[in-house]
Structures are given as C-alpha cells and as structure tokens.
Length: 238
Image (cartoon, rainbow, N blue to C red; front, side, top):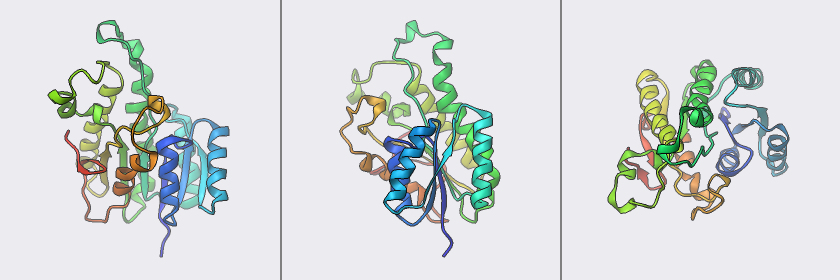
C-alpha cells in the first residue's frame, strides 16, 4: 500500500501539531510546517520519538521564498503531496471596528488569507501528482455569517474586523478552489472553540476534539465532499 503524504502548516503546537500526530498515527508520512525552526524541530522530534514518520519543514506562509523552498523540500523527499492542510493562522487585532484602520489588518490578512493562497499555489503541482489529492482549509465558526448573525450568539463575540473577516474570506476561497480544481477535494473546517494559544487556552474543547473535523476531511474517500464547510458534528453553516 502506498503511503499517504501530508503537509500541515502552522504545526509546531495546538491544532496543527495534534493534526500531525493523528495523521502520522495512521501510518502517513507527515511534513510538519512551522516558521519557527527551533519549535518546529522540537515538535517533530517529539513525534518521531513516538515512532511516527514526521519531518520538519521550515515554512512561513507569509513568505514567497519560504513557501517555495518548502515545496522543493517536499518534492525532493516525496515527489508528490496527497493532503495539504492550511492550518497556519493568527488572531489579529481586537480593536473596535470604528477604531480599525487598513494597516491594522494587513498582518492578519497576510497570514490567514494570502498565506493559504500562497501555499496552495506553490504545492498545486505536487497535489496534482497525487491520485487522490485533498486540501483542508482550517477556518472558524466566527467566519460564518450565519453563526455570527444568529440571535442566540448576540453579544458573545466582541465585533472586530480582522480574524472573522479573514475566516469568511477563507470560506469563499474554499468554494472557489473547489469549483476551479474539480480533481481535488477542497473543504473548510470549523474546529470549534478549542483550548489553544489563539484564545489564551479558554476553549472548552481539547485539541483532539478540535482536530476531529480536520482529520475527517483529510481522510475522505475519492467520492467524498468538496466545496463544503464542516465541524466535528457534520455540515456547518456558511
């Protein structure tokens, strides 16, 4: 049986690291992408010590050169990529909409929107070399207009222009990629409110629970869904 090759961005901790661990536990070869070399190497070494086939690859999703070099590394080591998981992301500013200026949002858009585009473009040829390519975009429920406008959530999420808007954009990117790349299964996932550094570990889900939807979409069959948005319970509202 051919080994499945996967890459996870932003994977030295939290949801990314747990995704690497779970996929590698299935016997996959997983490239652990992280912009911080020391942390990335340490995370990969811990997983390798557990007997998993994990390889660190330096990858800063905001850098063309870094992403191109990562693609070259994966090509040289594996020759193809079966599963790309665009997980890397940042929280962005919490300033009120009235106080937010364009420059306040450039960093979060660079990481959360342009990053997945940059990585997907760079790895597209390797994905097209796979006989069952999949892309998973790690989005968020706060990027869902249906969720944010649901009266039952009123007042629970302070309005901010950065993070929610980038995740809404990522959802639309998912839809467009699925339409434009019919031979690749492309889906977005909402991990749910999971305890990670992004929220000061205030989430009520474990990272294992938070990666359920990620792993589900990474492991879909050839006739699995594409262009969808899912959480650990099933289909999520756009």
